[in-house]
Length: 214
Image (cartoon, rainbow, N blue to C red; front, side, top):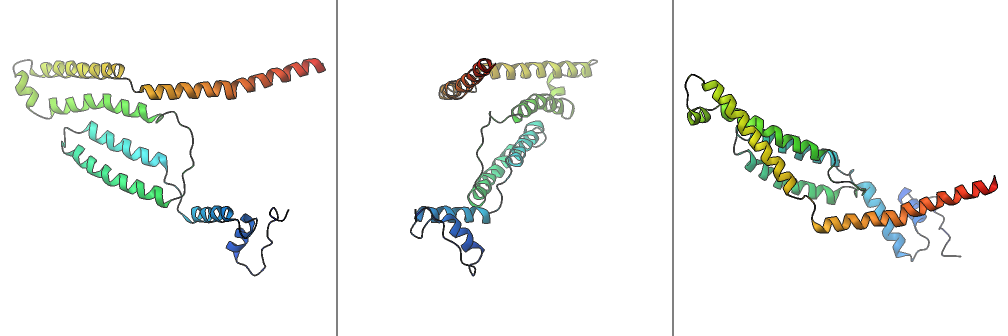
């Protein structure tokens, strides 16, 4: 039909007009015009910022804060101010860069293990700084002949207690809400009945046909 035919671009048209003619099925088709403008707009923008780089920035910042907060107690406040501006920058980048390509992901991946490791190592680093780089703990437990031994015993006892408290809190506090559990269960059911079962049935059918041919 006439609507299905593509208009032939004129030789004297520039490159944009040639692409435009490819996307238009007729001169009155507004949908094709919108699609054309959107594609040209996306092509003219800068690439989407790397999700890996953005996540790495946040994780590294978290590591500096939690590992050495005793050295500079105002660090969390400065990090909060930094994150406020970071949100604005990321918001601007999302609006003025190419549209991100969506893909499925199971949480934050390996970053969860990295953050968990930071949280445990931070206990040992901060308690060590308090124990041997300040006089607070020495004044608390007192001096004497076995002062160094007392510091070592105090250090390991406090670290074990705090790490144990972390592990208890992790097991006691569920990281998935009821709505999240229901969504995951629904997704698993959809994958089972809409994808896995038809594929399995198709394989069984092909095997039966092969046996019949033999």
